[in-house]
Image (cartoon, rainbow, N blue to C red; front, top):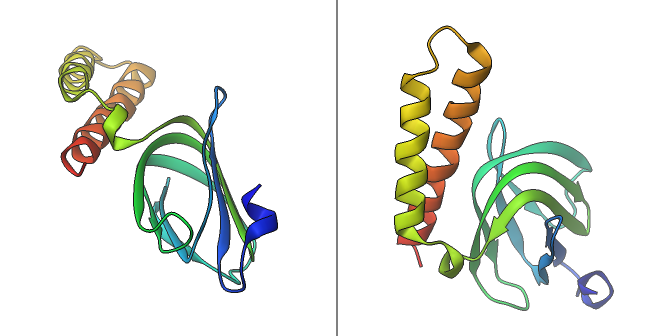
Length: 142
C-alpha cells in the first residue's frame, strides 16, 4: 500500500471506484476537481472532505512521475499525508473512447434540450454534459 511507502514530503494517493483501485502511488501534489472547483492537495495539508466533481486528477512527482486521470462524482478525503479519491467513475486517459464520449455528449445535449420544466431532468442532463466534455478533454491530453 502506498501509505506505508511514502517518503517525507510525499502524499500517499489512492483513486478507488466501486470496481477497482485505479491508482495506489505517491505524489508531491494532487490537483483534483472538487464540486466547487479545482483544488490542490500538498503534503501536510489540513484535513478536508469534499464532494468530487467531474474532471482531471493530476498527480505531480512521486513514485509514478506526473500522471493524469479522469474522475467523475464521489468524494475526496485529504489528510496531511494521504489523499483518497472515492469516485463513481475513474479512468486512465487511454481508456477513454473519444467517439463514445462524443456520443455521450450528443445524447446529453438532446436530453437537456428536451428537459422542459423538469428541473431534475435538466440537472441530470447538465451533469452528463459536464462528464462528457471532461472525458473529451482528458482523451485529447493522452
